[in-house]
Length: 117
Length: 121
Picture 1 (cartoon, chains in turn blue, red):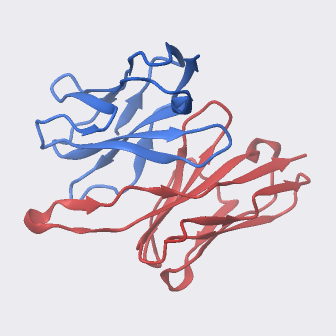
Picture 2 (picture 1 turned 135 degrees about the vertical axis):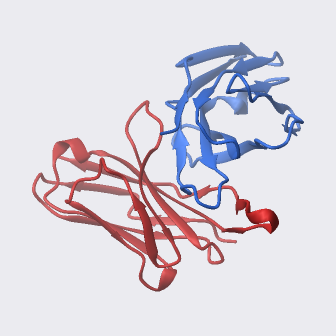
């Protein structure tokens, strides 16, 4: 069974600085998707960035980028130029891309990011 | 795109009562998911549907939980004989999925609703 682990329950970053959130996962599959979702306080969860395992190039979305290390099964999120609005819970998630695999998403336990003014 | 809507937003019930939650997904999405989230934890998978078919159900889900998606549109999640341990946020999410060329399973990103917060007293 696949698992997703986020070992940092909480992180803090100064406004305008850079922070990296860690995520590791375990799977025997070779083709899958990885995601970072953001959940602001009392608000709905939204997608931040996604990575397809067959792509070697790391995904980027404006100030958000990932460091995808497939062999190490590591998928970290880097937030550059942190803003107060980035404060939220961040969840790493995994989903199989195999046509015979399950379509469920497996989430980590989350990292609470605090942004200090 | 009106987003995923869930009703009610909050539900307080007494132990032993039955509760039902509703989720209306984004209209063109064929996949619908239910997750449960407790404070400080990540979403825990409950079940998902492709169209009207329930394709997977968590083994952690007791027989008190049942979900339906008649006609592949909205979905309901019912909890019978609620227990205090059922208190949580229940999240619904939807996406569209199909098999791409070369048989990769493509999925659009999950779109979440605001959730239904259940409190069992």
